[in-house]
Length: 213
Image (cartoon, rainbow, N blue to C red; front, side, top):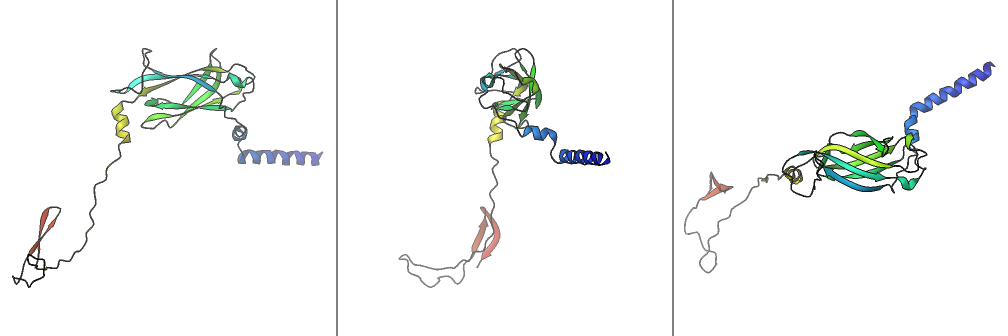
């Protein structure tokens, strides 16, 4: 009996040690599948009045808006498991206001959790990752709509973020030597008609006050 208790204690200790090395949540996540056949039928940006906003048109100022996404994972039938996920590329010019929120089916059941990556990008956009919960399991018609609160980015802000900062030209100091050679009108060297001549030095179009003799 004592030996049995020792074996049980040893087994429990091993499980606890394994739990510290490999977290349980990560162990389940490793078996998650990306559901690439999930169909996204609509991605649309709307203002507070429900009017559609075309992000390709000129936008003069930032505006509060909502990004609406219709998605359909019913092709997988009842094979969706907890941890399975799909990704949606968000349009540039739209900036989400929060990073995490619930995802529900058309009948209001929360079947997934969503996370916006690249939330702090100056250009907006980024990726939306939708991860299914256990409530999606054994369902045969998993689909729904997502509404993400955020704002549009005016075109000037987008252009400013794409303009590269110009670097000021740098000048490297160097030493030069000047040799005075006298030539006649035919290009032949001749003796200097003057005993000495002064050459004034300039830097960046401004005289340095120095002269070569």
